[in-house]
Length: 377
Image (cartoon, rainbow, N blue to C red):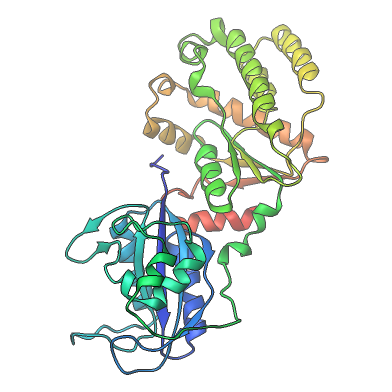
């Protein structure tokens, strides 16, 4: 899986041709669909044309979370402008436009190239940027000037008069009311992408993220070398560790007010143990499990990501964990069957969704990710 580190961008939007408010909303929708999650949107302001004679503009600023690089975000913003009908002319200076999209900040980065400067050099001189910027980034400090939007407003040379309008831009993320859940579990076979999807959802929807701590298990590499010998200590160590994590993480959240996203369900312990253990070992294991988890909280939604075995093996190879490279297709098939049997037995008293993601690359392709979100809600 690719790197899932995220940048925080502040993007300025402006329009003074056609239905200007509708243009801003269309741009917000495209940015969400093609670049990343919109986490904050300012009020919309009417402002006079700046630097030329023309119709008044409507302006706004949004906060954006994206894993894309600054140059990639720039390219996508330019593509959105073109899609919306903006035609750039070779003349110099400012002109009316159906849409104008500018990167103001990306984290605290300094970028200077032929076609991109971050922070945008004109921020201190533009009231139509500073007023909406203050709505979404009041605590942000300009990484070069070391001043907040309010301080920059107080000292700007721009004396333009802006009017804040009542109509508000709609955040497209509200089309996916996932954050209305309290406790969401993303499950799947080894290499199905459950951790990547959990991270994406937690980032986009402000969820509290709980990830399985499997990387610290000393028995896991040994199990893949000699399953018969290390199956029982492996499953017992997982049982103990997941119980400790349950006490440490899940119980610290108020499931009535927090939105929690986890990349595992504690019942996976039973699924894997039944596949890996001998029958008498599993009977003992199950007794211990039922004693430990008799009062466990159940998720509002349990999602199982189904990947075909070939894709699972490709993903396992791609992520490059040395101790996983000898996993056999038959083992993955047995794990998948274990999950399906578990889901079948739980479906009457759990909200369960099985989603086939074999043909989706929801990490690299945002349209695939949004398609998957639609299936969740």
